[in-house]
Image (cartoon, rainbow, N blue to C red; front, side, top):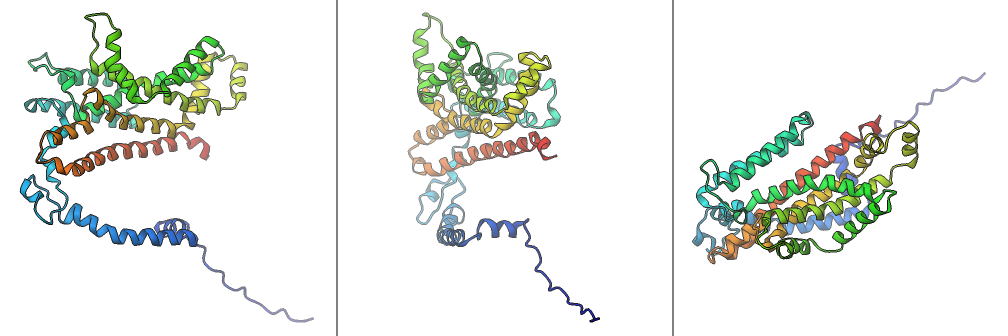
Length: 367
């Protein structure tokens, strides 16, 4: 009987790490030869252009509102224009000595928006808080009471107007979109046809046309002496426009739900609204969170179009501030970059919040 000889197995290489920064770089930037080539080309361009961009934006930039320094030879970006025109850009044509009113109103509205995004504050009192804050916003901004001077809505502008239009239009568009989406799937021909016509009619025209109709054409159809404030008309136009697009997003989620769940709910004796509230809508809305948030972001940016009806929101206020002063007019690009940074901050925050919502609603699928 031959003796058995022990043969050791050769050591295997350690497993490749799949988490962390190094793993992400290896997978996304150097995954294959095409990706590596693209990374090298883009990296070379960045190494060529980035020093010049940093030199213009930071190293040689002028940070103080000094007109002569901005026009000096070799000067980079003139951020002093933002310092000089900051209050006009942020608050628009609101009276200079009364700008503490939009400042307080904006801070309060922003605080409520942040609170509303936190799950711990999703209580019954949150709806009452919204009514109270919006009431305070309009009373303080408009004035005419409590010793405050009256400021008409056509003089509101800047960041307060942008936040007011976007937050109110989003809040009002969502329930309208929900009803329209359900109506398009209704078995009643009249309701289904009305909802279809509404969606196709609104989606068939650009938002500029809707704002133009709301601001200039709608008053011509009203009885003589009857007038609705331009801010209300513009808000209604943005709301109806956003609701039409959001309704199609929600309808996509409704159609993706298996029909068997609705049939199962019917066998249990649930009514139509019970089925929608407890079974259909929670699942359908969870599927379309990215689409809904994309619609919110689009609506927030589309508020810049209200400038065509003489409501100077954030972008319009910046143009107003520079067009009225020939000395600072050459530095529009710095002003637009400042506005772009504000828009990016809000839109990026909404995008990250959307990802958090997706994780929350998909926890049941990870079990």
